[in-house]
Image: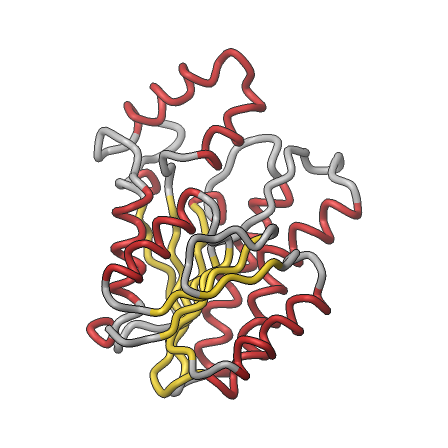
Length: 239
C-alpha cells in the first residue's frame, strides 16, 4: 500500500491502532489529535470542536499531496442525560463527532484520489443505547445518516462507510465505565457475557477491518454502516 491516509483521534486507543495497521500496510499516515502527539509520519494538532481549525488543517494536508482515505475515529462523549445536557455539550459533541468530518472531507476533496474512502467510526449507541450519554448516542445516529447521504453526494469518486462498533477494550471504554463508579468491573463482566462472541473487541482487530474497508478490495461497499460488535445488536435487549 502506497497511500496517504488521514486519521482523526490518532493518539487514542482505537486511533493509534488504526495508524499502526495502516503504516504496517505501507501507508503514509497523517495523524490528527488534540495535542499533535500522534506517532505518525505526519502529525497535526487540531481541536475538532473548532471548525475554523479543522478547515485550516484540511487545507494544509491537501497542499502536501494526495489522500486516499480519511478515517474519523475521534469522538466527544459527555456524560450527561437527555434534558440534562448543556448547549455547549451538544454543540461540541455534534461538531466533533459529525460536523468536523464533513468539513475535513470538504477541505480535502481536491486532494482525494479516485475511489477514495471515508470511514466513519460509529457505535452501537446509534441504534440501542444506555442512560446518561444522550448527546453521544444522538451524534452517532447522525453520523450514520451522514454516511448514507454522503455516499450519494460524493460518489462515485468517494466511498463512505460507517463502522458500528460494540465495546472495544481501551481508554475510551474505561472512560465510559467511569459513570458507573465501583460497578465498572461488573459492567465489563456483563458485556462479555451478553456479547454473543463472548468477549469485547481489541483495537487492533477493529483497525484491521477498517484498513480492509479502505482498500480496493472493498470497492463496492459504500453508503452503509457495518457492525463490528461481536453480535451485540443481534440480542433482543428485553430477553
